[in-house]
Image 1 (cartoon, rainbow, N blue to C red):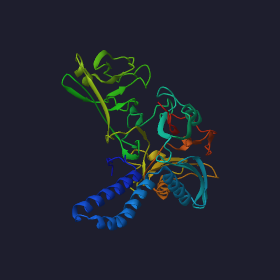
Image 2 (image 1 turned 120 degrees about the vertical axis):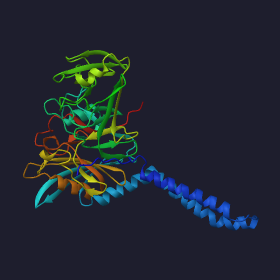
Image 3 (image 1 turned 180 degrees about the vertical axis):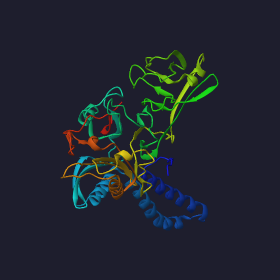
Image 4 (image 1 turned 60 degrees about the vertical axis):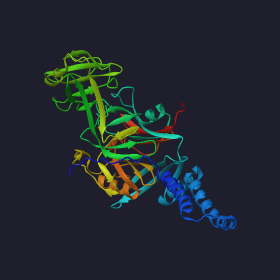
Amino acid sequence: MDTLIEKRQITISGRLCEGIFALSLVTAFLLTHSLFNPTLFANDLIANQAVRTPVLKTLTENIKEELSPEVRKEKFEERIKTKYKGYTIYNVADGIKHIKMVKYYSGRPVRINIVEINKEVAQDYEIKPAIASEKLAGKKSLRAIAQKTNSIVAINGGYFKPQTGVPLGTLMIDKKIYTGPIYNRAALGIFEEGFDVGRVQLNAKITANGQEIKIDNINQPRMLSSYILAYTRDWGEYAPASPQYGVQLRIEGNKITAASANPLSIPENGYVIVGPKSQLGKLFGAKKVKVEINTNPQWDNVEHIISGGPYLVRNGEIFVDMTAQKLQSIGGRNPRTAIGYTKDNDLILVAADGREGSSIGLTLMELANLMKSLGCTNAINLDGGGSTVMYIKGQIVNKPQQKGGIALSNALVISKKTVN
C-alpha cells in the first residue's frame, strides 16, 4: 500500500542523550537527598559524605566518558571490528572506515564495498550531496566530482535524466532546494547530528491577487501539461518551453517583472513560473506575489536531502516498496548503491558490483537484507546499474563496468569541513 512516511528526525545523538540522562540522575540524587533527608549535624555530615562521594564520583566519571571523544572513538573502533570480523577493514580517517567483502548468493560471488562513518567521531568532516556542474544540466565522473569538492569519500547519488544530467528527485544542498521530488520517492535527510528517511512531497505555492496556486515541482522536467513548475537560475539561463496554451511569469523581489508565452530568462534571485495560462493568468496585474517552496515532511533544521528509492529498511524492518515508488524497471540482479543509518548514528554507504561472473550483483531484496544485517534501522536504494561507483582517497575502489564509472549528475561526498 502506498503510504507517506512522516516521522520526527533524529537530531540529538544517542551519546549526548545518555550523557544528559546521567546528568539528570545526579541532579535527582541531590534534590532527593536535600528534600527528604533530615538536617545533618557535623558528625552526620562526615559519615554521609563517605557514602555519597563515591556515588557522585562514579556518575561524574560516566558522564565524562560518554562525552569524551577518545571514548567515542574507541567504541566506534570496537563496533566496526566486531561487526566486520573476518573482513578487510581500512582506516580512512577518524570515525570513517572502509570495508571490503565478498558475499555469496546461491553459490555465486558479489563484491561489496562499504563505508561506515560516525559523525560524532569524524567531527572534522561533513556529509552532503554535490552536483557535477554549476548548473543542474551537467555530468561528470565521480572522481571529478570528488576532486572538485576535495572529498575523501564519494558515492554516486540519486537518479538523473541521462540526456541532460538533471537530477530526478529531491535534492537539497546547504538548505537550498535544487530539485523537487518525483513520485514522492524516498529520500535521506541529513541534519547536523543525525539522519532521517521519508517519502518526500513538495509543498509549494504562489500567492497573489487573493489567489493561492499550487506549484507542482521545482527545476524538474514537465510530466503533465497541466503542471505548474518553478525554475531557478540553477536550471540555466532560460526556462524551458511553455506547454500548449501556457504562459511564463518572471518573479523578482516579490513582483512579476515579465509575462510571456515564450521562454523567459531566469533572474539570479528569483523564479520563472511556467504553466497553463488558465491558472497563471489569475495572477496578472498583481502588485505583490509570494512564492513559498517547502517539503513534506517539513524537516526542521535539515541541511541536505538526497533522494533515491525504493525503501530497503524502514523502522528496522525489511520494506521494499518498488511498485509504490514506480521503480519496477530497476528490478532484477544488478550493480547496487545504497545508503542507511544505524541506531548508533553510523551512516553506511554500500556499493555492490554486478553484471559479471566475478560479481553477479544483487536484487533489491538481497540488498535490503544486507542493509539490515549491517544494522541499518532505515535505508534506501540509490541509483545503480552503470552508475554504481565508490571513490576513496583518490581511488575508485569498486569495479564498475565502465572504467572509472559513467558520467554522473550528482553524488554524496564526505569532505573536510571548511573553516569560515
